[in-house]
Image (cartoon, rainbow, N blue to C red; front, side, top):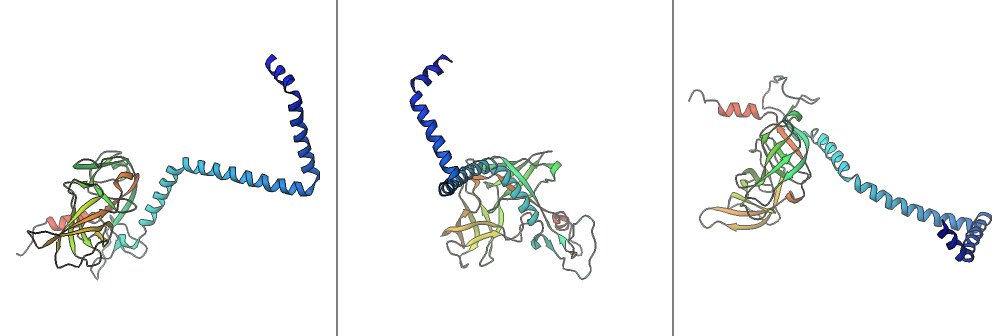
Length: 283
């Protein structure tokens, strides 16, 4: 306390001058319309700038929550897409209670679920992704996993609240794919080297293909919906021992920055597998 009084006594003249200056400015602004308008404009500019910076900081800390809400909204919209429904090739419609139908009677084929990535590897020969969504939240084995940019992998293990995904960056991962322009069917796999690139095989050398062409999932892929982006053609080479190209693709998904994904269930797959596994009659 003593130091405060000493400070005031030492700088009394300067402090008194500052107080008078502030009082003069207040009186000038209060009783002069020109200065009052100028002050109001400056005050609004400063206040607006401060509020803008505050909002940027606030939005930064809410970024993860906003991303989560955006994913849930995208998932809701994806469940309404026409591609998730299809009509069987039959003149007679049989109602199956286990299948969801839209208002026009179309059978749902795909169901989308959001999930958060809690672990992800990219530097191994066999990479996996762990999701914080499991059997209690509707996850099943063999469900497809996709990001906002492209495909990610396939569910291979499920616990009550977690699921494990075989990444596209796995030496045993193979996805039926096709060149979007020519509709030629091939197979995508990873060579275990660069996580930014995968290989498209089984495309005949007679197929027109160019750098930059899109490669998407084919209709032969039972767990992935068709026409989901896998990657784009980066390099084309001719296999010297076969009649096929070896095509290097740049992955559509950035596996270094996975945070939220969608799980996709083919609700008609069990029926397809039962039919394909049944013995053929009248051979």
